[in-house]
Length: 188
Image 1 (cartoon, helix red, strand yellow):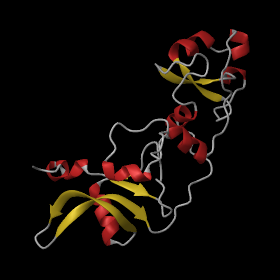
Image 2 (cartoon, rainbow, N blue to C red; image 1 turned 30 degrees about the vertical axis):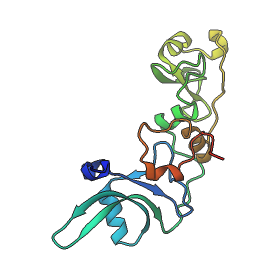
Image 3 (cartoon, rainbow, N blue to C red; image 1 turned 90 degrees about the horizontal axis):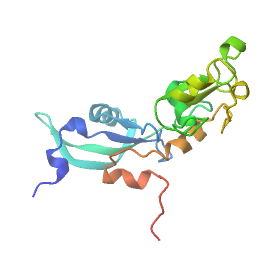
């Protein structure tokens, strides 16, 4: 019987990247490197290999098991405040409309409209579904008679990482599970 990793194409064997403290660099999106990048980092002695796939790659002179979990040798300090991007905004608001809680047709909304002097900042932009955004239009929530569940604020990188834990990816290789701490009950 073949182990599933033996028949995997190498491109479907990414390496989970841990910081030097053995925590993932990122939970959402999960910090993964393609196998080529992981192997290059191994040879440059920038990472330690923690676990391997059963899958091997071959050169004329060498056979190498592909790394499934690697840890950086030098700690990478995450920036305190993340970049202001649409993805990070949605993650801050947990992919939910701040007006009705829907997770469908998401867009972003200026709480204080730009026409009324509102700026495009963490503190003024929030996740909204398309129907709520249309209903609100160029008005403030108060003017539109709408209740805002969470007022926007600038998140820290730690807050976004914490929010990301609520969205585990669809596939987790068994060798990664000891290094990922999703919101699950631990065995006693």
